[in-house]
Image (cartoon, rainbow, N blue to C red; front, side, top):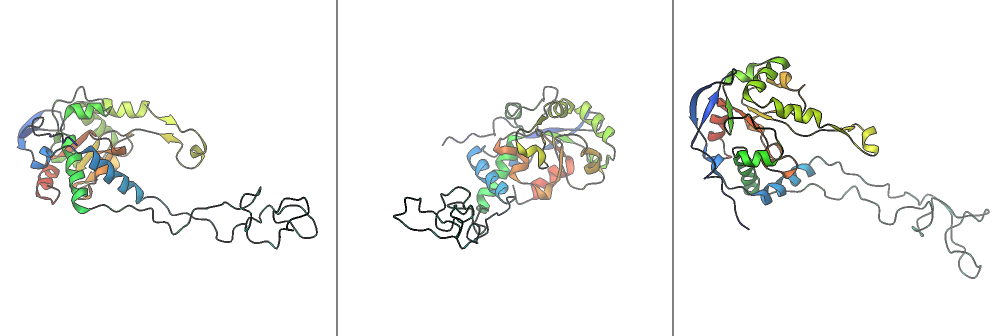
Length: 271
């Protein structure tokens, strides 16, 4: 497999923007942003992360077996399925000996003891996180994922630490507009669709895409301020995983870093 490197596409330093959308200084980028892009490893890790949210399910071991119905045997010109005694018709729930009968039990029902949670090696998990982080610094990869980033000036997008202190959704919208990422939130809002099938009656009626990801070091109000904007996620730098940067195992999510989060990322074990 050919490994795509991000070294040629990422600069050594990046601009830091204030809440007015103006560049105030430059900071050095952590070495993690120069990691190779490995979509194969990212997909493997994301699938493992998603498997941890699955709920085990299984059927009652006695389902279809709580009956005294028995087959009458051969030579009677009747199907050899269990029949209710004294009545003659097939027992709908008597699938203990004839799982193929109408209304009977399933032949091979799911078992609650089946292991559905996938494990992942530590080095693979870290490689996936590094690769997913590096992809957020390449504009072509971010655009290929579908984000509206025509007005974004630099990648990765870094803002001052005062961004963490915003406490109102309107203030977040103003900052997004000045940074050029509000069009991506509009894209998510206008792209919402009603799910087909029974899922829309089971708590997942609307399907909505992913918008900007805000990586911070301390939530001083930005979490409550940004949660009303569709597609926007807020996460501290200590709780990052590959799925946050690559939802659906697709690299290149639009990510906004605070200056302190960028510094703490360089000190973490991920790098």
